[in-house]
Image (cartoon, rainbow, N blue to C red; front, side, top):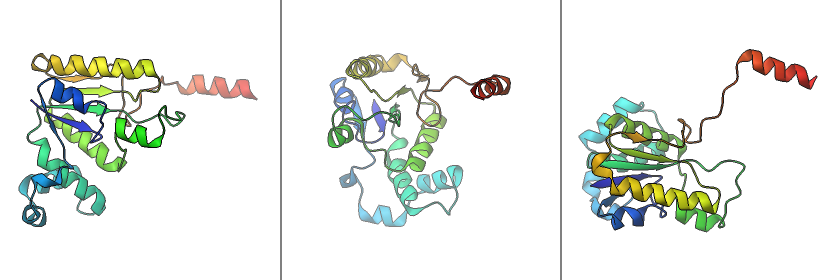
Length: 186
């Protein structure tokens, strides 16, 4: 099966895709596309732009969506890594974090890519960004299990309860509860 990864090039999961006999589809593999096709545009890209955004989106987002349009039609599954928590300093240094978990690149393009993946209704594994060695091991085990059982999975797996912003959803508080907290501060 063909698997896309968001963010693209998150090396922590790509070897697992190939180890389990699947194919990693990368929108940033420029050697697969010729310049004529990029200059002329294509129908599926135009459909993506008209369905998910306006013509006035920044050129960087359009470019990323164009490259994504080249692989999403071929995708049978997706793996989405959550956003690194703001309070996390990273475990392995900036370069190693970038290699392991991929670049966050353009957040707007990433959100649109995830919306497109959800609309395609392909099996999807959503994983929270690991902040400890134990969480990395768990991420690898869960990814491996997902890929080994991909033929049996037909929906999104979101055990980490990631929201639209790719961070675990927090408990919500009622207005009355918030008022009580604020009253106790005074």
